[in-house]
Image: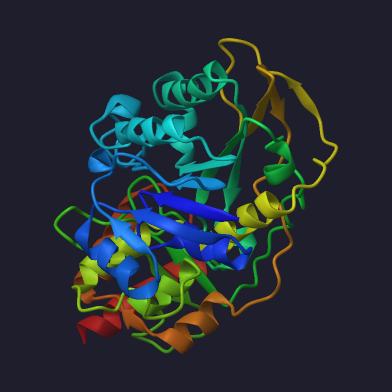
Length: 375
């Protein structure tokens, strides 16, 4: 099987599909730093602006992790008609000219809710109007062996096959919560209304600002020494948190630019799971489902076969991932940077002034970190 990657970023989809045995034929990526990574790391032709691409080759799979800028809760929320997220129409133009067997889209879960789910409605209707079956499922990267909580919607469509056999064939259910992790992630930039707390994982890596200001999360390493227990991951650790090898984006770009590339990427092991379903489709699992009526809110998972829409009761955890290094061990191996006095004291002040409930031992560790940094 062969694929074309649109809005390819730094190749998360492609690495995952290649692990499943799907070769990459062509990539399109507009942003120069990301395109440079693709050119150096993957032996594939890379073209620029999708709007200047006249056609795509005949392949089995087309992927498009189209921009989330206008759909994200922390973005502009302009919706599917925004100047960036609306570029998915360019992908549709190319797909309609030369339809593949499979189409795979990826974006943020807010696309199911923003403006009454207008983005999801537009995408679903586009495929149904042209006789395609589709299915989508919200999944979380932390259940695929990486130490990052990252919820994303994966949408698979086909004119000839049942996409439920790709996304709905695995179901592991949500595991029981543990309170004995060696490290916990949080957003040090917050503290007024939330902290993005992660049990043994970081919160979602963000792309940062358009001018390359990095915004990696922070981690509390429970047994870490004073002054180092509150830290942020190195960019090499950040690459591992997305399933790339450490150093994948190390081609001379500034750290902020590298964080933006990593934060915008598709998690490699999730793409590999999707790819395995494309190569070897299997019967969907037996779970509760119901008709999805016009006007219903978009659920976490749904499908349309022959134009009949159904909501499926599926968790965000398809698999029981094989064991990997803990968040603490990952930072020990690939590096972390103690959170600065200004950053940690600002977060602590906001947290103290808020009504947010956090673990008391975390509050104590944070206070100690601020005091050590000030001495």
